[in-house]
Image (cartoon, rainbow, N blue to C red; front, top):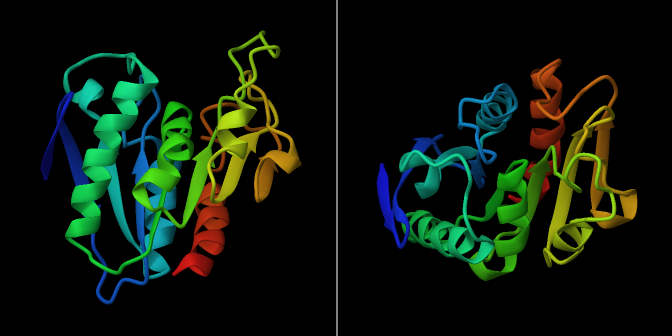
Length: 196
């Protein structure tokens, strides 16, 4: 499915389940895709738990860009996609999330789109080697519960437990969360069903 945004078309792949309890909307990082191993594992675990999952390729990636541009423009485009997904499923609770940059978008827009909660995979707390440039305010400012799943070897840092409703730090994992993606999926699915 294609959704036209102010930044151009975004692409949405939806895995629908019968009698869905919840819609989980996920997106990629700056240079990534919705085929990232952790996103696919989360999709599989969520679908098994009775949750429909939409994976969104944001407009900047559809256009071939590797960087999202300004946060304001990225968030504006994201909100258009969420409005369309919600309109097609009135009354169904929505949890939104993503990995890395996608997690930041999900946190920044959670209240505006009426999300019940946020899933932040590999939240990039700061640029590598620059802990003084913390983005913890995005987590704390989400206005809804946030689940953070990070690896303990992530060069982008690991948020503090107080920055989120739940923090899960996976040993041996880096920013890609690809050593045990199934574990990432289990953690997310177990947490999101409370918002159904």
